[in-house]
Amino acid sequence: MLIGRMHPVGPLLLALAAGLLARPAEAQVMPDGPTLTAADLRSAQDLSGDWTWSIDPYRDGQAG
Image (cartoon, rainbow, N blue to C red):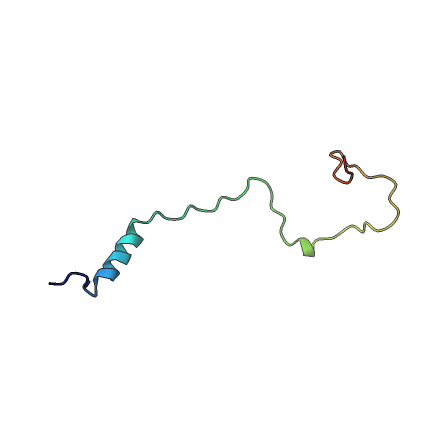
């Protein structure tokens, strides 16, 4: 009797069947809007210096 013993090809066939029955991964969906690439290579604006005003419509910079 071969109870508890598996044929050497059994695990291979089981892995192959599991691989064939598995659902393929969904493709990555890219956003509709533009994507910023090579940001470090783009020209920049220097923001140092005196600031007279700043727009903060959601009051993220203040408590309350």
